[in-house]
Length: 93
Image 1 (spheres, rainbow, N blue to C red):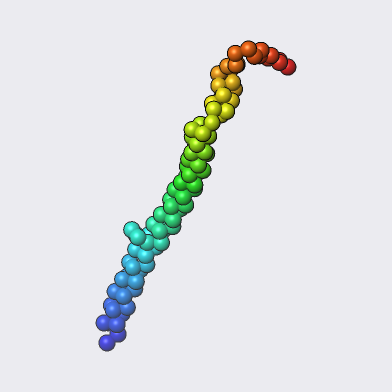
Image 2 (image 1 turned 60 degrees about the vertical axis):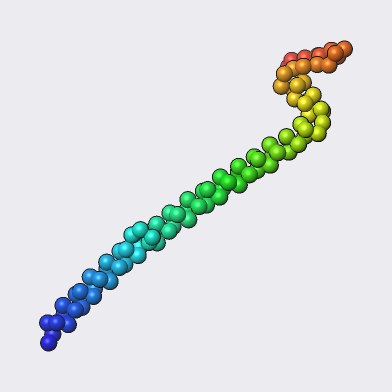
């Protein structure tokens, strides 16, 4: 009588260990879930960074559409342009 219960215990123990392995390390297991959550957080951070950049670009586009002051400022700063009749003084340190 002891023999069948020993086999049954061994089989149940092997099944339990197999299920535990799949739970912790298999596809859809805890390790996989933790990695997916990490990837989601990385993607959320990237999305936030890109949304902030998009908001800045959108504000810049609105400025360019609404007034020539921004265009003039960019032309002066980036291209070194001056208005007709102005004199540009360049100070070197």
